Image 1: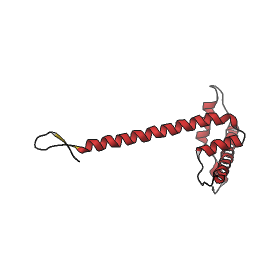
Image 2: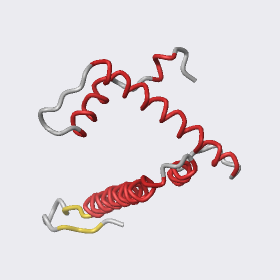
Image 3: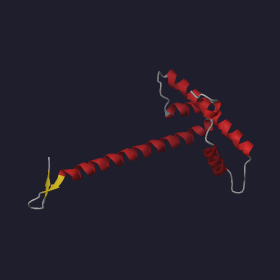
Image 4: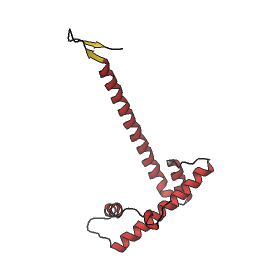
Length: 129
């Protein structure tokens, strides 16, 4: 756990960027409002994490999963975010699988290329086993 309360705060640069992306052009936000949003965000994250942890513990698991977080969102009455969050989680899983598949394919191609060697005398390609 964090040693100091300040350790639980989100980085100001990240909070500022999120706020700017959420607001229309030309709208600014005061420093005190930015600080309040950062504190509220940190508290929300801690609350959501605690709720997800309770769900994981009930299932006799020590690791919080994405589905635990989604269930926790519903449990803390943030139902309107469940569907978008589920979509984001599925997109993330799909992207991770595509990256893994691409890496596996690259490794296989490299392995196949390494198995093809040129004969020093004839210059012809030979396949090694």
